[in-house]
Image (tube, rainbow, N blue to C red):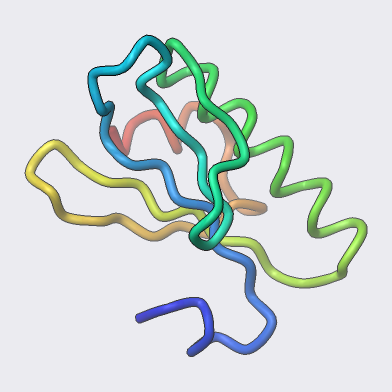
Length: 89
């Protein structure tokens, strides 16, 4: 399911590391909005961004996290504590 299927919902994507110097990216829809050296930094940024987007635009924000096996897990960014998001990695 794509973000456009969910009305005004904003999606933030956290793909698996790509092997570059800052391998952990955060994407908003298809646009890279951050690159980080660790998963923890990427998650923290994504959660902060989700809160900011929700406050400014008043829409739901979801996180789509790529697992090691290539499957994607989708969670409500506003309903997740950092520890519970980290456990999806």
